[in-house]
Image (cartoon, rainbow, N blue to C red):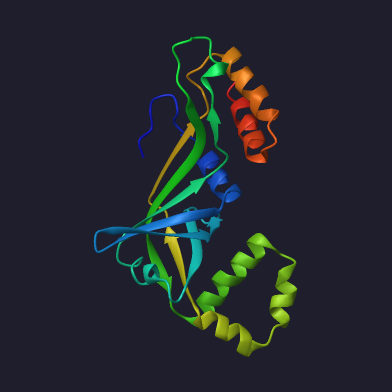
Amino acid sequence: MYTPKGFEFDNEADKIAFMKQYSFATIINAINGVPVATQLPFVVDDSAGKLLISSHFALANEQAGNIGENTSLVIFTGPHGYISPSHYDKWESVPTWDYMAVHAYGKARIVHDESGKMKILEQMIGYYEQDYLKQWNDLPEKYKKGMLRGIVAFELEVTNLQGQKKLSQNKSSEERKRIIAHLKDSNDPVENSLAAYIQKTL
């Protein structure tokens, strides 16, 4: 990840918390030299002294047959927005875009056995909707096993974690206050969230 000085996202715990908050991410691999990507919900687990992320593909997805052989890049992104030069003190200024992102690298391990796949599915249910577990547990075994046959579950141990927080840190506090006020006044909830992150840089 290209990260200009001043926009570093260095704190490991903060990066992991960001991944957990914005856990619908994009996994990218190269197949025959061509980048291929899929958007997936991930479970982010750092409870055992290492950082693991897990999810599953549809069985028909060609990317599923490739992830065990190559390093994967998983991109987690958060709120972002256009920043107008009208907020800056200098007339000679140009527009930019503020955003946050974390890139996680690692080689995925495909989970083949039924119990392992079931564990990953149930971890995801617990992660996103704990209350659904009761309904899931009451579903017929034949139905659940049919669902398992239609997915490729995997777990990826993150070996390289990079991040960037581009939040107008290169601007003065007064300029950032004007940016924050503009974003807070927006009807776009994404821009409202971005304002809260920029606020933390003051």
